[in-house]
Image (cartoon, one colour):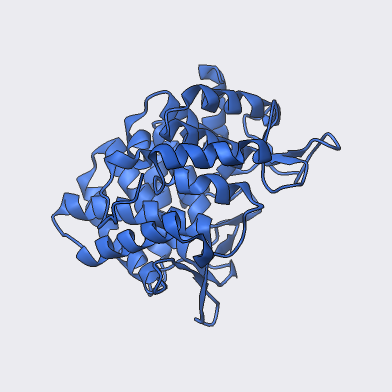
Length: 342
C-alpha cells in the first residue's frame, strides 16, 4: 500500500494542516467540521503524534457550546467564525470515539478526566434527539429546532460513539444505564428497521457504515458488503461516492477498507487501498476524488480527512491496537443489546 517513507510524508502533510490552536480544517482556508477534525486527530495519534492530537481535543474542549454541541462548520477552524450554525448529532458524538482512542494510545488518565465532562455533555446533547424508534435525529437547526429525520450513516456513527462513551464511563467507574438503553435501541433500529431512516441508498456510506461502526457484524455484515460490492466498487479505481456517478473518492474507499478489516477481509482491504494510490499527490496528501469518465481530479482539493481515513485504515491493517480497539466490535461495550447483532 505505502512505504514507510510515504506514510511518514502523509503524516507530516496532515500535521502541517493543523493550526497553532489545534484546529484541523479540511485544508487551510476551508472549513473545519467537528467529525473530520476528530478523525484527523485520531490519525495523528495512530502515527504517534500524540501532542498534536491532544491539541485537537483541547480545541474541542475550549469551544464546546453550552448545550454540549459544536457547530457544523467553522471557517478555517476559527471558532469565532462559524459558517454553519446547525448542530449535527453524529458530528458532536464523535468526540467520544476520539477521546477513547487517544486514551488507549497514550494511557493518559488526566486527559480522560479533562475530557469526561466534554464527552458527557456531547452525548446528552445527541441523545436528546433520539426518536421513539431508537434512531437519532439528524441535527438541531441554527434556531434550535430539532430535525427528527435520521440518517443511517450518521446513526451508525453515533452507535459507535455511544459504545466508546460507555467505555470511558466504565473506565471511570461511572456507569450510564440510560446510555446503554439508548445504544441498544439505536443498534436495533440500524440492524432491523431501515424504514426509520431517510433513503440515501445511492451513497456508499449507507452501504458500509453499519459494518464500519461495528453495529452490524458476523454473517449479516459479510452479506451486506457482498450485496453492494458490484454496485459501489470500481475495480482498480476505488469506491464510488454515489451511484451512478463515475466518481471514486478516497475517503469512502479508505473507510470501506477499514470496514473490510473488521470482518476479516484484510486482503480485500489492502487491494482497495492500493487502488486509490492514484489519488496520491506529490505533497503526500490525497485528492478527494477522481471523475474517471473525464480523467479529472474533482473537487480540486486535498482534504485532511481523506488522508486521515487512509492512515487509520493502514494503522488497523498494520496492527495498531488503539485503532483496532475502537473499530473492533468485541472491544467495546455493547449497551443493552437485543440479541440480533449477528
